Structures are given as structure tokens and as C-alpha cells.
Picture 1 (spheres, rainbow, N blue to C red):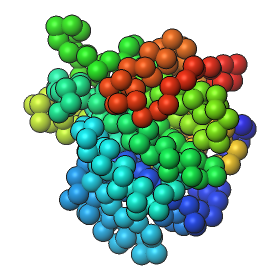
Picture 2 (picture 1 turned 180 degrees about the horizontal axis):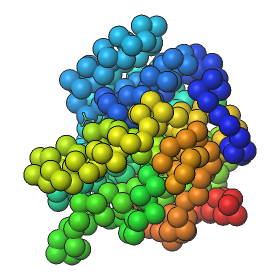
Picture 3 (picture 1 turned 135 degrees about the vertical axis):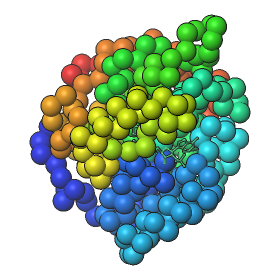
Picture 4 (picture 1 turned 180 degrees about the vertical axis):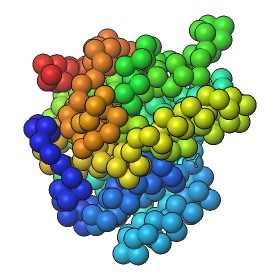
Length: 323
Ligand SMILES: NC(=O)c1ccc[n+]([C@@H]2O[C@H](COP(=O)([O-])OP(=O)(O)OC[C@H]3O[C@@H](n4cnc5c(N)ncnc54)[C@H](OP(=O)(O)O)[C@@H]3O)[C@@H](O)[C@H]2O)c1
């Protein structure tokens, strides 16, 4: 791929006739991504944390883009049974074909919490729910001629170490930010695992990672407020507010989902200083994110925890030598 050249929203191709699914589409970067894709003419399915959120998101997007073909679906990523049901619902709404899946939803800085399935919450929502959703949507994705899965990570993946569903005390010391960093590392490991899975089988599916830089959203701050850590919440909000809007932060996600020149296994982020803002370009992933054993370990573990939605296979690393 040649994703180093300048790119703007004007480069979004005509998306009419194509179907996109965006998770976490109720607000922030996910809502902005859904709006850009809808303006491009795509039919957009807004996967939200509840049916009420889905309904509100659908109304809000329609109010902003009256011509939008859009529908909201409840999909709580912290409940694997709901994810499976939502995938069926989405497949039906999409008439069996999904061209783009943007795995954007995320939580950050939560106090130690377990999902209903018993997994650490950052791992559960940010990674495992998306792994399951992608697996359950595979038949619909493979019905598209050039399907793409975009996993949304963060520059903070550089601080991730070893993602695990068991990041719980006393087995492991828990910290609300390291749990987030680990989950964002998992988003990249999953991208490379999926890229290998697809290329091993000669499938046209492209797995692409994207990060938005730093944007002014509710990510993290609501959890911090609820937890009474007002200073940390204020600091986070001030830092986010200095950088770009969700609408701009969505650009790398939109490019990853739509630019025909973006190849399987690529990683896009804002091209400005420290990748905090700027137009989307190809960016580097931490070495730890490209570690074959870590990719395999997470793939195996996620397969087990979600009931093996992906047919088993040996993994080869097509991303090696890409940088
Ligand atoms: N903002 C930044 O500076 C920044 C930087 C790097 C990476 N990112 C990444 O960008 C992505 C979007 O974050 P954002 O900044 O736009 O945050 P946000 O405004 O807080 O939005 C997060 C979205 O995720 C959804 N979500 C949370 N838990 C969910 C669940 N259990 N099931 C389904 N959906 C759930 C939320 O829905 P509800 O509100 O209904 O719960 C919301 O729509 C995340 O993956 C984040 O890691 C953000």
C-alpha cells in the first residue's frame, strides 16, 4: 500500500451500494465515522451499547444527514451472548453482506470491573466483544467483494504489555490505565492475527488498524468522574480538548475503511506531531504489537473465550518486513 500521500474526506469514494457497521456509534469518534461514511453514500448500521442508544444515534445522524441510509442496533459488547444475537440482527439488516466493519467502541480508565462473562472490562469491550462480533459477521463480510475490518487502537498501545481477560487482582496488579493500554495493544494484535488469517486463506478480506490521535470525547472522563478522581478527569479533558474534534479524529478510521490503496495489515493514524492530530498516514506499531507469539496467544485465547468463531489455522505474519 501507499498510504503516505495526502488524503482528505474529498478522497472518500462513492460508497453507495456499500454497507458499513460502526460500533460505539452513539457518540465521539464512532458517531463522526458513521456520519462521514453516510455522507459518502454508504448504508450505515450503528451498533450501540443498547437499543435506546441505537435509536437516539439513528435519529441524531438522520437529523444531521437527512439523506442518510442508517439504522441503529443494540449491541452490548460486554455480553458475548448479545454480541452473537446482534451479529445475526446486523446480518439480516445488511441482507447478508457487510463491506466495512469499524470496531470503534471503547471504554477507558474504569475501576476494576468484570463483564457478565467474567472478563476484565477493558479487555471484554475493547477487544473480546469485537473479536466475537467480527467472527460472527465473517460470513456477511466474506459475501462482500472487498471486505474490510478496521480495528481502532491508540498511540497508547505503545504502553501496553500483555493483554489478558484475567487482569484481576491478586493474579495481576490492576491499574485502570494499564488495562486500557493492554486492550489497545490487543486491538493491533487482533488486526495482525486477522490479516494473517485472511491472507493464509487467500481471502480478499483486509484487516486494518487505525488510531484517531487525541480527541475531545467522553472517553475515560465519565469513569473518572464517577470514581471521584476529578483532577485526573479534568486533566484528561483539558488534554483532549487541545487536540482535534471527533470529526477530524475520525479521518484515519474513514481512510482505513475506504481508501482502495490501503492494504491488508496496514496501520493508519494522524500524521502530525506525535500522531496527536493531522491528516491520516501510515504509522508504526510497537514491536510488541507485531510479535508473532503474542498474536498467536491472543488469537488462541480469544477463540476459546468466544466459542471459536474463526476456523482454526496456522498463522503466518504477512505484516513482517512491512516497515
Ligand atoms: N478520544 C481519544 O482521544 C482517543 C484516543 C485514542 C483512541 N481512542 C479510541 O477511539 C475509540 C472511540 O472512543 P471515543 O474517544 O469516541 O470515546 P467515547 O466518546 O467515550 O465513545 C465510546 C463509544 O463506545 C461505546 N461503548 C462503550 N461501552 C460499550 C459496550 N459495552 N458496548 C457497546 N458500545 C460501548 C459508547 O457507547 P455508550 O456511550 O452508549 O456506552 C460510545 O459510543 C475507542 O476505541 C478509543 O479507545 C480515542
